[in-house]
Length: 323
Image (cartoon, rainbow, N blue to C red; front, side):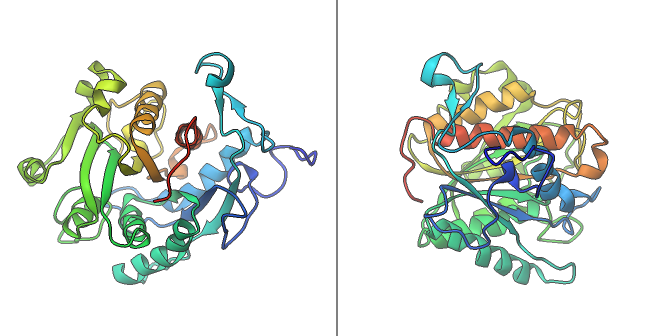
């Protein structure tokens, strides 16, 4: 708020970062891109409003002036508590998608916006949208890397590895299997799985392809260090976070809520452990559906804070290598 503007005034970009449609490395280190799309949901819609809701609530924390850091006083003493010191953010706006576009056209539109951000050496933070938007994001990262696969860390209630839902191959329930089949990924780790599954969920297929699954109750009994021990140290990794991985008691506004789930502290601890173990090259936050949030905006609040925590951990104490 160096210009004297209060958080509730002005344009609600993410953390009130400058709005730059085609950012370059000269503009910052992190670029936020929204994908307001939820035509691939199989239950409650509303995630199309996710980017706007997350941006709006993020202005609560729009008081940091670069190069100053936020102080997360629960991380320790001295420098240990500083996050995002010297890190500049820009908001690249939204990918324009229409309800009548084919999946191929939608994917191409996302790749066309996200790939240049990655190739410009900015760290991308994508705001969904339903979870189907993760597939073209993974395609963009893969293309920007010259076709080299990378590791995926996936927080979710669901595996999103159904071959088809209702005969549809491109819904929010199958981006992971499509990405795996396209050879985009070198491995998949999933945290927070729970709930009721139908008999068509092929866990044996996932296991045969090397996926590591951590059910929510199991993950709650393990330390963050144990949960990430199998990840290849320093490996390039994309993090996708479906907000329904959190307990709906604190994050109710999502299309497919399920009782149970991670607390904020549990999710934050695992995310920070992942960032300390591997080289996170991109992230997304999806399935926030503000119409179900009410005036408290709790779901969007948790989403925005976990983004801050994760990006802060990515840039903490090390130089991020280019994807």
